[in-house]
Image 1 (cartoon, helix red, strand yellow):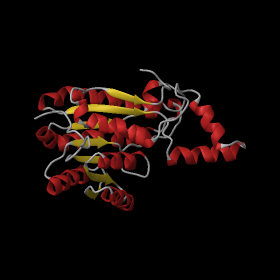
Image 2 (cartoon, one colour; image 1 turned 90 degrees about the vertical axis):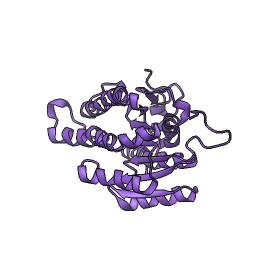
Image 3 (tube, one colour; image 1 turned 90 degrees about the horizontal axis):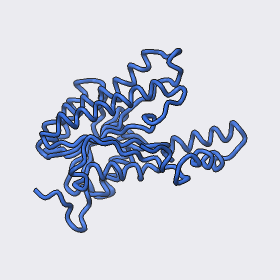
Length: 267
């Protein structure tokens, strides 16, 4: 089968993409960007109302959307997601592991181990659980896994140790999975966003501006000054990297991590 996209076609035409951790930020952006490139979506998260909202937007783009409320830390719930996806579509081409949890941001000397355990259970083991469940389907379609990581990989700032621990484990696992699953034709890659100029960060900057008597614009400029492009990546721009890795254009790319941070960190 040709690995070249058809002229004028979406990069993911006819594909089925499963996205975990679908919320109002990056998860939603990934789902809509994939739909815009011709994919049908399987949307997974714990909150059904949020999934329903995203599903409506996917359908407005002319694509199908299956809503499956899922707790990926629960084996039965995760298995039900896989069963529902295959029953509805009969195939899966890409799994996007976007679900994560940031542990409490305390120095390691004051870290609550329960918080670290919860973060690793969701971020790492949850992604591994879904990858295991969808391996057969992805092998059938010579598909892809895209794991959403973080620029926390690239620094060792105070209070981010527990988060970096979880995300570094996710990256190592992704690289090992690329080696293990490659012979079945499955590609496994990662995307590491920097700051994401979306609703969550915008709300945080507004809170900080009010707290310190400054403006959102000034905080944005100060933060963006650390990047080569002097701006912060937006959800759609990060989602474009996900679409690329899921598409035939990345047919020879596996075991890699694409940093999307406007040049804040080089790797």
